[in-house]
Each structure stands twice: as structure tokens, then as C-alpha cells.
Length: 177
Image 1 (cartoon, rainbow, N blue to C red):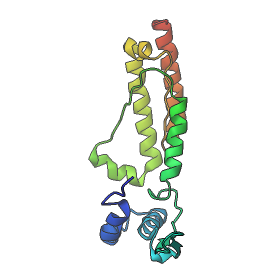
Image 2 (image 1 turned 180 degrees about the vertical axis):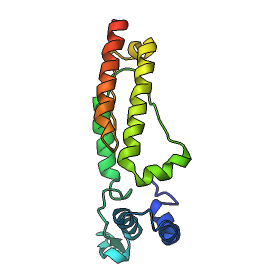
Image 3 (image 1 turned 30 degrees about the vertical axis):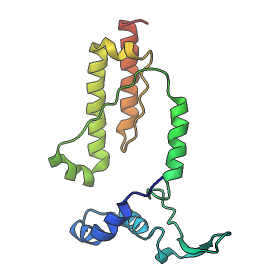
């Protein structure tokens, strides 16, 4: 596979410092560490070794990886293995991908108050999906079971799972298979 012409690391190297200065108040130390790790990944800054071809003795530098779990280079194999494993678990049925977003004006508030705002978002999402599931037989008929996987922050995730389970039971009672 050909290497992409532009990588996240290239963008971070070119614009990262200006971004860090402009957003100094809102970047956590962990976010700064991730940016730096990605910037130096597979560069001389982390050290490395020489690879030598057994046939022609051609040598080339091979730089060490950062190993950060957020790094696209370091985690590409792990990501591919994860996707392959999840693909084997997928049921042979239709799936719906639903995305809930927040207005731009709320984004800065959410950034500083993640637990509170995401809890509210998950509660609103649960109510919305509950309403849709109660009215839409297609949600039940397209798939015999509603399998929701939530990835998120805050205390709302357990609440939304409970509401979705109740919605599923209500849809099953209303539209038996």
C-alpha cells in the first residue's frame, strides 16, 4: 500500500505549535502529549536503527515509533485487527447509523464541562430514540434486535442504554416478529 502524501504528523509539525499557542487555555496536558508524540513518531527524535538489505547491502534509517494509542501510524495494525474482529461479530441484518450533534455555540461549553453536557446530550438522545422506536415499526422490522453501542463520556451512557432497552421491549410488544 502506498504511503499517503499527507499525514496527521505532517499537519501537526506544520501547524501544531501555532495551534497550541492559540488554544493554550483549552488544551489539556494529555492532549499536548499526544500531539507531540505524533509529531516525533518515526523521526530521529525518538532514535532508531539502520536496516540493511541482505542482497545488495543497501542501508536506510528506520526510526522508532512513539507507541501512543492515539497515533495513526502506531495503531493502524491494532485498528485493522479490531475492525476485522468486530466485522466477524456483525449480524446479517440492516443497521442504522444515527449521529446526534450539538450546536457550535454549545461546543465550547461542552469542551469545558464534558460530564454535564454529555449527560444532557445522552439523555436527549435516549428520549429521541425512544420516541422514534415507539412510532417506527421499521426500526424493529429491519432488525429483530436493536443493538446499540454507545461510546461516550459522562454518566448518561447507562441511562441511554436503559431507555433503549425499554424502547426495544416496547417495539417488540407493539410489532411482534
